[in-house]
Length: 527
Figure 1 (cartoon, rainbow, N blue to C red):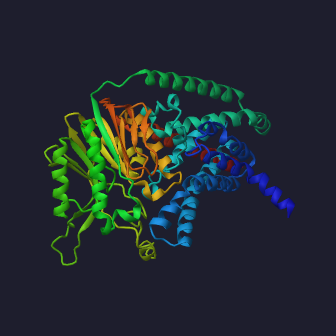
Figure 2: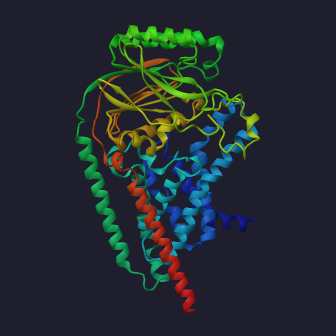
Figure 3: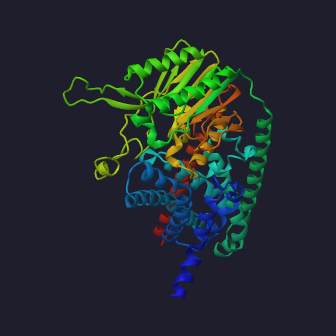
């Protein structure tokens, strides 16, 4: 028995170690420097493994990595979604198992290629990692949370080149450094197993990586020294700190509404040009509930400023004339001009699976009753920008800010700043709100846009277009924050052209697979 356990630890221990180190790189631990060495034990251990065994090793890497960074989902769906304990744990576990498939495939492909090609790990590993991380962001509605690059949101000099490559370029660099360290330890073994292994490949690889790192730092410090040139706009974010179980309780409707009005009235003394409320801050259906709607408009007109707020809207279905038709709900953001007229109504496009709708409902039919606390919303269809005298902006509701491709499309033809509104009360005091806030740093850098963030229970705050956090609130405090931000009209390379870097990694991955397959086929024919 001891021998069996010792063998398993020897085989998969490095994977579990690396996966555990990775979770410490993210909020709230924020030991971001660990990311640059965390994968090294895992990569070294793959040298002696067949692809099937490597897949299992990669799978074991993913379990502590993803469960450690996503455990807060259990709190959300159990405590607030009304899902019982066992199904809640099962859903989180299944999600982590699914995400671990990607690290498993990465490990299998890496072990295969490192044994059959003469390329160094510092090249093979980052190309494969980015390919699979990018695919994970889109497959099955997409889930880009816990992408490796997000661990570096505090390392501003390094992440500045994300305005060219997106978040995936930062992931590439991290894995490349881990691969280089692994190459240093495994070079002798590769020379023994491959008598004709060209040492020059590794030397060239190290040289190119050194140049790449130097260029990243040079570019990063240069960008950090560039102060954005734009208009100065005073903005207030309102953090109502409304308990989740009170938000839609009619008994607290008046209290919730008055809370936002009172905090807003106090913030208005500072004469902000824009006031931002969080996601679904209005405790009523805007436009449908005429009394509350008119009260809000009348209140806003006294402020003489723009007011952006979140509300649930009731929309008519496309087949409104049908006897079986029913109204649709949308999670929306409304911008009221100083005269009280709506100048923007944006419906959330990318909804939260199991939070705002049940995906693949025909397959997951049994969840209809389990998620009675989870509403079904209709997705929006159009990406819109709000227009003000101070510049134009995109607004992203909750989960949407996690998707770099969705955000960058809004700024592909221009824009001056970014607003994200959210209700992170679902996350409680877990690491979820901190992770969610850290993601906004990358959206700021990628698109060179300052970010204004309003969250019901926090974290609200401001981030400049270089990713520097200008100010943020604490969790579960009823407060407001007012700051002067500088707009930025620049269009970054990433905003213009998107994920070209990731596509390049995918192309290289395909070429490597084809090349290896041809070699194996040729060897089989000669045999």
